[in-house]
Length: 417
Image 1 (cartoon, helix red, strand yellow):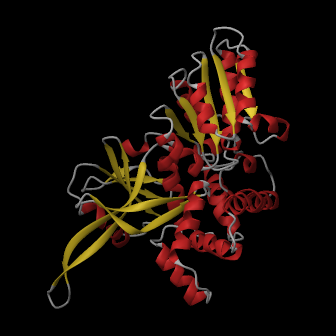
Image 2: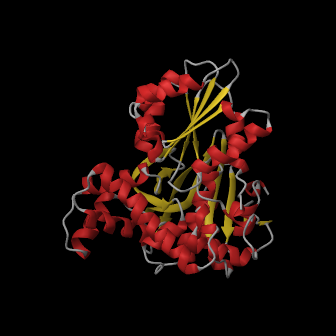
Image 3: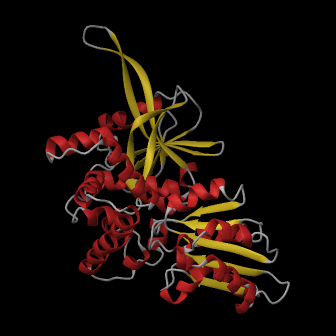
């Protein structure tokens, strides 16, 4: 069963032969390798590219251990170039190649080699792309299956599909499994044996129990504002463990670098500035988050917010948490500042949307509660409330769009309805 990933395939096609290193990044097992080595390679063949002009190297395969040496790798590439036609070089898990930045810069000097790489660690990749490639690195982020991709192969209704997706997520391997037990076991093993082991080995973490507890705290608190100091205080008060907030901040960076979590910063919409801490953290995959908690805290309210955040990121938005300051009066008629929250401020170039996640809107009181931050924004950008229940899209008197979670996830232009 092949799952089409046209969003990412089209991004690769758009970047073909642009004189840059195409770097496909994302959490491990999200489908980076399959995208490059199968889907994109098949596209090249369909366009007439011969097999001997598609050069593939999987560096995490022990059979290719010798090619992790930079000189041996360059010699191997040179040996494959036999004519002046374009060659497509695909390197899987580039961070396993010694001196990979220097090697990739060397590839840029070969006019008929178009280079694509995958990698699973942002610390080794994003910073190097920005600094070492001097504007000649082109990063493409890939995520686990979106709900639309998931539903393209799911044999069931949308209602059952969303429950399955919120529970077990969108890791491609999970979708091929039938039983709940197999899915849960796979996700648990994936976290322990892959993400956790990678981080432990790479950074030589001396207190794995503290690291594990931090992940539990972040998983339990998705959608909630927090910062390293607050988490350190939690360790001290609840676990009776003293851990410095700088250590917490470092551990969080490790998780971000491995693409396991992502943060949404607070943004003062009226003041047009970032506030700093606290901020929100979301998991790249809801199934991974649930597995870390033993599938014991499956709250649709928070999982829905995580899901909306991921979908917005997949669509290419930079996503922040909005803060709106309003002046109110207390019972003594004294003015005070109140801070209202917009779940997501979504920016892509000059385009902006304000998006609220609302699990249920049972009455007018709840509607007013959900929209109060939006009505206090006096700009002209689109304002949207996403509701879990199936509803027909509608606009209220303030111009706010209400759409169902299904419409939001399954229709690419849903925010413009």
